[in-house]
Length: 302
Ligand code: ADP
Image 1 (cartoon, rainbow, N blue to C red):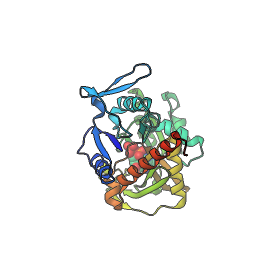
Image 2: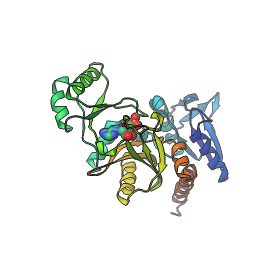
Image 3: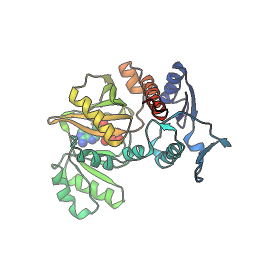
Image 4: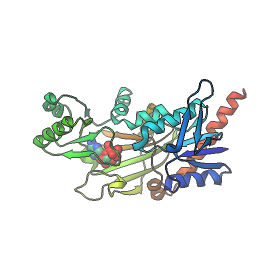
């Protein structure tokens, strides 16, 4: 098979591991810089050009779209879909996952456990918004934040009012969320591929003063056993968002597991190093199975 990895840099751990895993299984793998792709949106024959020529035909694409290029990256993935290339995650699901509020709304409709979350536009209702999520302490989040940036823990009602007022005044989209204190600065990252959790790690914030467990914020990772409930919740959440490959973050609360977030381009370094599992290999095997099913379907076998 010819596999393309859409990524800004070939030397990123995740990109490098996907290339390695594809080659190990006898496939050709190229790294395509998402931002160097340009598109010809012509009737009946949509194409992508890359660095001066038409992009060659690929059997499958693994999109690794960073949050700063979601719009352009999703357009490139959409163009590949129009060209009938198998994309591990499709453009609609990638866009959905990037918007935390949209994702939570979709998950809530399906009864998935979530922290109580509020969203408002007007500053007139701040008091009630704070009450709605159970009062302080509470967490304020930028809708499109990533790696823990724009996630703020607020401990007093006075501070909550000022911070919410400031963000709304600056026209930043934020959500206000119940603080899950009993998580004690830890969360569980479940790496979903297809209909399996292939690896899971516990991330722990670096110090008792820090509540965000992100590895980019100095958190540490270790392998963890997840419960059957957490496993099925992670798989359901990924599927509700429409992702085949997803990093589903779960916090353990007094009322059971709650979904914090579903990531469309989860990093491989933390999870592979913490668990010793070949996650990149699992993604390539998923592509092999999915494209095989497609082939059988079009040849009438399946
Ligand atoms: P990001 O997408 O920037 O990683 P998250 O919403 O996942 O943002 O939050 C980052 C981290 O902060 C989480 O992994 C979790 O450890 C902690 N956190 C976020 N929201 C809450 C909350 N409501 N209660 C407790 N901890 C939280």
